[in-house]
Image (cartoon, one colour):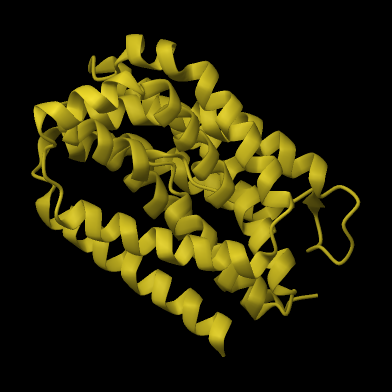
Length: 272
């Protein structure tokens, strides 16, 4: 058992993680997994769980928190008419199938491979967001012609890495001409369609796994899920309000730096 003071500190850390990820969910249309996954991974490493268990638990728990965070975010954005319902309607089934495929694929991949994928994915997202430029009309028309394939890949990659999809869909929607508010609001809906089926797969896949953290349901750790969800519930409306009232340049730059630091830390732990 953890001592009470350590448990209290960890509880505050998880709530604060949820609070920050909720701000990001509301502001950027991401589920927050890009923050939640490394925090839970490092926490379980600190508590001496194996790397394989740590990464799968981190992804499963992250996906479970994204369900409610994304739903909360899309409701807030819809109040401001910033959700592209027609796009969600076109993409929802391919996103669902992609999410299921990615979640099943994640069960067949070792934890170390997932760590490497997540770290390099974080690098890619940070650089892409830093130098985000619109595509040409030719590229835009090509992307539009294969949008069903793109939505399937967004669902697959996102559930594989335990994220809500916003880190893929927001830059894509921005580059294809959507304004930031419409891109973020629509991405929140995408996150919900990704996280729901993927969470079910991670829950079922981890039911018979031994040496998991106490109070776990499959690959979902209940205490971190509850505390992080509590944090997102408080902060998602704040993130939406900030996005609709303030310039996002400095926050976006800070987010990119945070991604780079997180990726470096995960790779360092893997090497050491």
